[in-house]
Image (cartoon, rainbow, N blue to C red; front, side):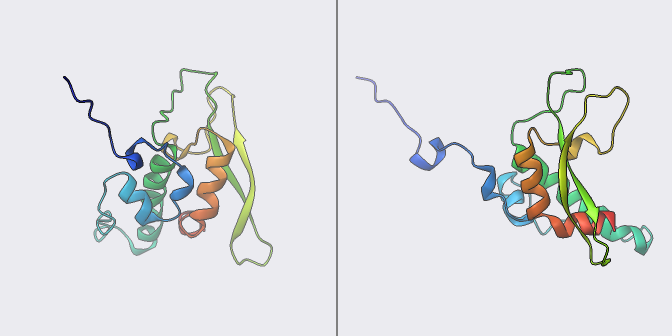
Length: 137
C-alpha cells in the first residue's frame, strides 16, 4: 500500500497578498534578508535614500504579485501602477489612482514596480507609502 504524503494545511492555503504589509514581510515572503540593504556608501548622500527606497519597493512588488511576470509583448496583459498626487501642504502625497496603460512606447514606471491589478497597486501604495515618499520626494 502506498501512503499519500500531504502538505501541511498552511502550505496548501492560497497566498494572500494582504499579508505583505511591510518590508520585513515582503522579505520573508521572498526569502530575502531584510537587514541586507544595497550598499550605497560610494554614491552621493542625496541619492542613497531613494535607491534604498526603490529597492524596498521592488522587493515588496515582487512579494505582493508573487508569480505575476510582466510581459511587454502581451498587449492583453494588464499592467498597473499607483498614481500619487503631491499634497498642497507639502507634507507628502496620497494615493490618487491606479493606472493601466496600453500605449505603445510609453512607460511611467519600471516593470519591476508594476502590479497585475488595481487592488495590488493600491495595497502597495498604502502599505509602502514611506518608501514611495523616499523615492519620489
